[in-house]
Amino acid sequence: MAIWLLLLFLLSPLLSSSTTTAKITHLFPSSIIHPEQLKISLATKTTNKLYKEKFYTQILDHFNYNPQSYHTFQQRYLINSKYWGGANNNSPIFVYTGNEGDIEWFAQNTGFMFETAPHFKALLVFIEHRFYGKSMPYGGNKVIAYSNSTTLGYLSSTQALADYATLIVDLKKNLTATDSPVVVFGGSYGGMLAAWFRLKYPHVAVGALASSAPILNFDNITSPFSFNNIITQDFRSESEKCYKVIKRSWQEIDETAAKPGGLEILRKSFRICKNYISAGSLKSWLGTAYVYTAMTDYPTPSNFLNPLPAYPVKQMCKAIDDPKTGNNTLEKLYGAANIYYNYTGDAKCFDLNDDSDPHGLGGWTWQACTEMILLTDGNTEESIFPASNYSYNDRLEFCKEKYNIEPRPSWVPMEFGAHHIHRVLKRFGSNIIFFNGLRDPWSGGGVLKDISKSVVAIVAKEGAHHVDLRFSTSEDPEWLKHARKREIHIISKWLSQYYRTLDDSP
Ligand SMILES: *[C@@H]1O[C@H](CO)[C@@H](O)[C@H](O)[C@H]1NC(C)=O
Ligand SMILES: *[C@@H]1O[C@H](CO)[C@@H](O)[C@H](O)[C@H]1NC(C)=O
Ligand SMILES: *[C@@H]1O[C@H](CO)[C@@H](O)[C@H](O)[C@H]1NC(C)=O
Ligand SMILES: *[C@@H]1O[C@H](CO)[C@@H](O)[C@H](O)[C@H]1NC(C)=O
Ligand SMILES: *[C@@H]1O[C@H](CO)[C@@H](O)[C@H](O)[C@H]1NC(C)=O
Ligand SMILES: *[C@@H]1O[C@H](CO)[C@@H](O)[C@H](O)[C@H]1NC(C)=O
Image (cartoon, rainbow, N blue to C red):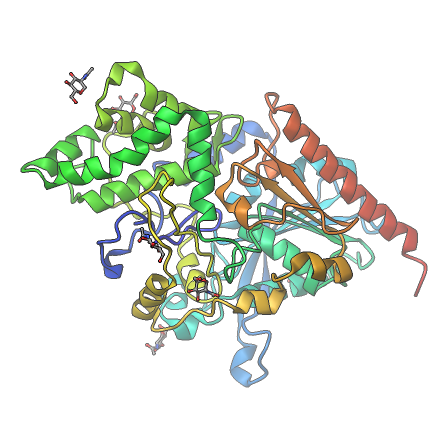
């Protein structure tokens, strides 16, 4: 079972069906990138600070009126008013609806908002999702907040949206900017939140840019085979040979592991640190690299999950197809793994058991055990991974064991809608952009066709996971520039419509 973090993944032993659920503790792919590195690379990009950090006293439970639910916690938000045209001009407020991690990380990867703010004279606000980063209930104590289902029970998308609404309204009041229009932005889970926010709180936000938001990846609406089909296609379209090497490698790894001294051969081939290794952990580590590389197959060098070159899938296949490696599969795979785990060249050895979590994504395990049942485990016979039928039961058992709870797979579609989305949103929704890049495995769960004049899909065949929201670079391809231009154009339309009709009704 694999619970891929939305933007990313969690719980990765996708290839080790033999491992028991208890072993599934590897929350985040081993990462060699340290938060300081991120900050430095960003600091060199911008001379002045991108934002100020603020805290807001937030209600723990928006939906219950017993005395205990009046507990509060400190919710972090980041604000940049450098470009804002001010309350007197009713200049707009752009809000990023934070997802499952440290909000600074998302802000630093959402250059689109910083780069369009001067044009729109927009105030920028990035709100951190409860239970992540510094927005920890229970006095900021993460250990207590993550204790058990009693405390984690307050971690839900519905509470998070209510947080965003109350914070935005309070901030506008403080700024005497009650008539400033708000546009929400988000990528991945944050994109789902942005779209849902527009639907649930139309009186707070005039529109939403939901980038790579797989709002249909629930309740069998999207096939559980779709995710891995897209990854397969990404590699296969690069090189049929490369696809075949990876596809056949799983068995070879198992066979090597079964030989006497086989694990030591594997350990040495992959320069794995002298700690525990099993065929399962190796396959899972490799699988993680393929999945995340496909997700972040950006057209320019990037540093989102790990530092990567431009078009990293192509680079991986180049390493695999390298004639110097002859027919040595392990050497080929090592070359591929080096692209994802060692692009900087700094890794001394690879730690397969590294469960460091530099971006604070751990709370996703709870979300993936309650509402976020985004099944992605299916692998057809053609898959680059071993064929497997997806199983909701694996998830169920894992969640029972870990939290003693049962997921509610149908709650998200019940709460926000997902079935017959075209029919429903055509009649009821407005002002949402759904961006998807078709190389992104999550795009299979996205809205890929226009729903109405104002609920539109922007689809980039060559695009990866919320690539549109990233800082622009001088090497950006035309299709990416074009997608961003369209987004700016549509947001402008929402705003002018808002201003035109502002005085129509008191
Ligand atoms: C859950 O965690 C809280 C905070 O650590 C603790 O007070 C409570 O006793 C725990 N509840 C259960 C059922 O373990
Ligand atoms: C608005 O101002 C009050 C009073 O200073 C403050 O407590 C609150 O945190 C502010 N709201 C926001 C969203 O910053
Ligand atoms: C999804 O489909 C599978 C196979 O058809 C079925 O067993 C399962 O119950 C379905 N799940 C949901 C949530 O509808
Ligand atoms: C490829 O593998 C075969 C055995 O399967 C071996 O005979 C041959 O020498 C290998 N070629 C290279 C270039 O390693
Ligand atoms: C990482 O890359 C550098 C430079 O290519 C290399 O010297 C080093 O051995 C690699 N680390 C591992 C663990 O393979
Ligand atoms: C998946 O299920 C189908 C239909 O039940 C079955 O024919 C197939 O062998 C299964 N595949 C795997 C890999 O278990």
